[in-house]
Image 1: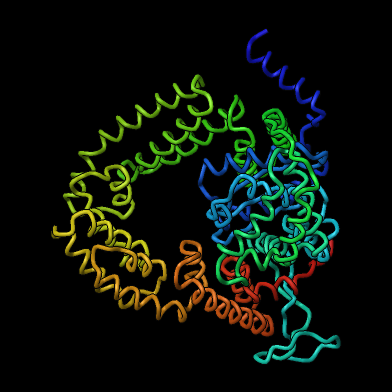
Image 2: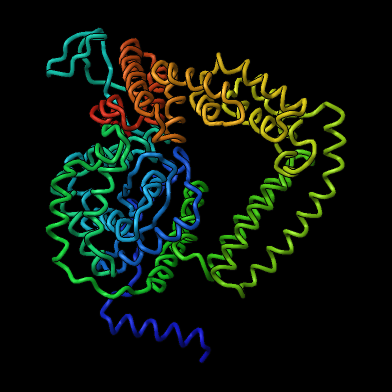
Length: 577
């Protein structure tokens, strides 16, 4: 018997002896799982994945150590990181658990993170989605996301008062039933908002807290992590309670006291590895994929989750290689001078480092190294051609971007950054223009390119509208006068900007900045204005314009009072046939 096989047998025997369940999570309701998977993919596409391999592995390690302590096996739970700035976590009915970047930015201890994950696992294992106060809305939205979407009942027909009392809006009168269809990412956003905002009752939250603490103790983590988490949230959460964890997880003081009272209920057990459980869960995900053939978008999310579930072994290496080759093929399909070998090489090196850390003897390492040598050679061959084209003065923006990525240390880098800043400025992309001008100025402040970049920034600052661009300038230290001007402009603009996307992007990148509160307040006002426009456009039958504004609210201001109104008015669309 081989050493590896003997080790595996001993591990299985040890787990059986310990009385811990070995059965993997499985898909017992393919219809629910498939719909939830589609929503998960759309949510990830809308908000973006938080690329932090170390934290992703940590979340999966702790998450599966907790999950294997539960007898619940109806769904294969998966854990993913989502690029949202507010500290939060949420779970879809199909067992897809998300942790936000903002939550991880709080630097949680393992015990605190176990508390977060245990709570979300508790919602799944206790099947709270079946007993939600707003179950009909959530399940109807989830059911329709594949075929039709949901209707937002915010129509105002002839401004007549309905027979049943409805909310009054002084701008448009009384609202009456009717509405517009919300599909795709907007419908997914509505589901996430429902889960984040008011999905579960006080009793459900308390039950999930208790189950989470039980799983913590069973998995070898201190149940006091729950109490520590609430203390940390009170000291570190964003100052605007209506925009973060406090709004989505209410009753903070009561839950902290309950966590403290319960922490001695369970004896902390010895910690046990979840490797076998993770491998079996990965097998369940693979089996679902092979049997039900999900669409390309959902398949990509499923494969990413499968890789995170167990990042070593043959299945994981096949998934990694498939992902790398997709990236390679997409890049090599571009025109020669627009190919970004720099990004390609970085991706391959990151994958190599991950594989090497997991298994230094993996055969995948030799394959990656062979391709890396090929990319290095191609990059060297490209350099003289790129310099020649740059000297000719005729090129596209994509060429400039790839030049900086391929040759960041080239003597021409400040020149290229300046040209790219000019290009972005002409296109109205203020944030990227500022970033490139700053690159040129900081790389060679006394060169002609550096001086021209400084002049470009000074000319641009008084008219800048993008909050992120202004924050970049206010934070730079090369030009104190420019920083002062940008800071003054930011202070004035934070409370008066006119696009919800502008505010949302700022909060994503600078959630705890000095002007975050002003930005939040203005974002809520803009979202409320959009909601008023939804009502008006529905009143005149302009479905397209109403839907555009619904999408903006759900995409850029999902935690706003306006989004809450949309959730309140979401109803199932009934379609004949």
